[in-house]
Amino acid sequence: MRYFLSLIAALFMLVSLEAQVHVSFHVNLGSQPVWGPTGNDYVEYYYLPDIDAYYSVPQHRFYYFEGGRWIGRANLPPRYHDYDLYSSYKVVVNEQRPWRHNDNYREKYSSYRGRHDQKPIRDSRDPKYFVNKNHPEHNNWMQQQRRGNGNHDLINRGNAGPGNKGMRPDNRGARPDRPMKPGQKAGPAQNVKPGARQGQGQNIGPNKNAKPNNDKRSVINRDKQNNDKDKR
Image 1 (cartoon, rainbow, N blue to C red):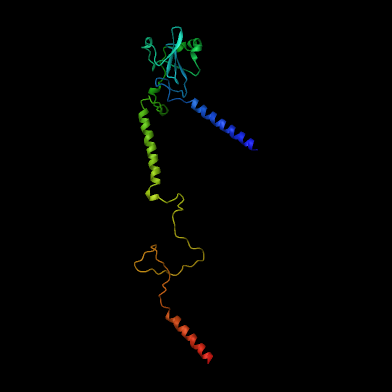
Image 2: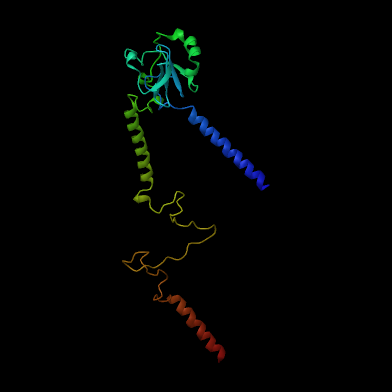
C-alpha cells in the first residue's frame, strides 16, 4: 500500500513539472525583439525572407550565409545596412537550426519578400507586451506595478496597525459582557467606595460594616423573650 501511494505521488509531481515546463516553453514575450511581429507568445527563430537570413530569439543572434557557411552574429553585416527590421516581413520558425533546410524556407516564403503589413511589438498597446524591457511603455508599466504592490502592502499594514494589536480576526481577544442565562436573576448592587475605579485592584463586594436592619433586630429580641418565658 505504501509503495502504491509513493508511486501516485511521484506521478503527480512529474505531471506538475511537465505542466510548468510546458507553460514556460510557450511564453517568451520578454525576450522577443521589439521589431518582431505581434501575435506570438513564443518564438524561437524568425526567418527574414528579404535577406534570406534568420534571427534566434533565445540567443539574440542573426544567422546569415557568408563565405560558404552559416555565421551567427549579434548584428547583421554592413551589406544589409538598408534593411529595416521594423517594416520588413518576419516568419516565425520554431525549429532547431532552421538554416539546415534553408532551401525549403526560401522557396516557401519567397512571396513574402517586400511585404510590410506586420505590426511590430514596439507599436503595440497590448499590456502583455509591456513586460518587454525594450517596449516604450515598459517603464510606465513597471511604475504601475510598484504602485499596485505598494498599495497592497499599505492595506496589509493598516490591518495590523497599533489600534488592532491583540485583536484576532474572530474578535476572540475582546471581552464582551456575558449575557444572562434564562431564568437568572440580577444579583445585589455592589458597593464601590467613592472615588474608586473598577479594575484597580480593589475588592468590590457587599459592605461588611453596614448595620443590620432594625426590623431584623426586633424580631430576634422577640424570639429571645418567648424562649425565656417557656423556660419559666
